[in-house]
Length: 577
Image (cartoon, rainbow, N blue to C red; front, side, top):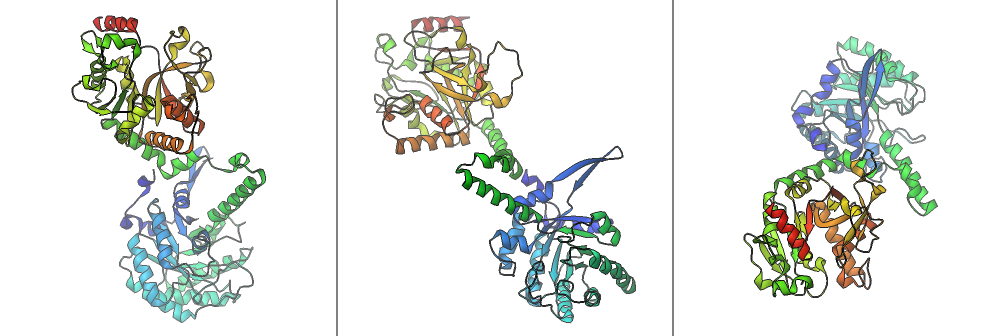
């Protein structure tokens, strides 16, 4: 998770110097936003050397002027303000814990550079590299561009001003020498290095756009002599963008302490994005572009979304999830027995059907219960629950009654049909589910015939799992592909028992789909003859069709729907036992 990569400024700032003091050749990768920062911070490769495992990572992050400017759609000519650059710098610092080196361009004038040093040091940046060009600079790698160098005495004074303003000994100012870029002789580069070292700079970066490393290797050899004469030990930095055949081992042997890969993440991303865009244009769909794209879940994992989701689910499990029981309709089967009372008031073993449900919910530590009443509402009574009314219960469906309590759905909810009794373990297992939308599904439907006059909500699951087959089952397979009461029982794999759990995310998806359907559709919809009679299972099927993931929790019996006198007798027998 990205939060685990955060670090305090004072903990980060000295990391670069510590690496250099340990004699390590510091490998640095460019980043231009938070996501590329995470990659630079965490990517690694593992190999084997002489029977020992070797793990290779980047040691630090380079916040590049070129890639920061380019990612914002601007040229690398110091047109992007420092405040904008500082926003990117902080964006990367927020999700990483490795030391950062900032490309400071020319640093501006001496007064501006003082403020730059102060802000970067306070933010926890380890080093800033400034180049000895005249403001506004032009990028060093483009051929045919006039490169105007600042007088070395003026640049040396800028270094002194920067060093005088910093508060800690950990922060580093490194001078980038552009003599070879500007076509000056090697002597000019060496003379500048000497003056900058005498001004107190913490390191030297020698830049070259030659495809051959000979001139930077020559500089490195003579730089050692300068350090010896001045009795100093200051690191040497290179950026092997053009002379990229040379290896880190060779650069280290030549005396380079820091090797910066300065723009590769942005360049590779640009190429991939361009190819993806062209593929979509050519094929007029995105199917062919999928192999070019990282799976969305991998992005979720990288930026910490999956960790957030898991924490949300843990929070939901420690709070009292609301339970909504839609019980507004009239049941013609029990009309005479109930004498005007709602079905929830059926007597089963000396307690009402509703009281049995409340007891089961209470056993699962679910006490926030809302019942939606309609028919016979004045006869409803139960302790410790909230009762809301659906005055239009004769119109619409159970879903309309459920939506009376939509204010209770914001942080997720459990939906329970009003005529369902179940064993305690079913609810306990349901509250432990981590998926966003979970329907409780009974797999015993294949063993019995549907009861005449009773409407069953059947389910067809992904991969059509058959209990009789002995096979390994994977969590990703507990997906619902079809739900409804018009599914042929012969092809159904499960029956939906009228119990579902939706997380905060699942509830948001549920309400979003419901509102869109009501706003944009009329007439027949899914299995309903009219949108006004849209059912819960219709809406779930619509969500599946739109690509939302609907999971199921499989059970084998342990529940009972009270639909006729035989069911009452069976329930009474179960409670007596």
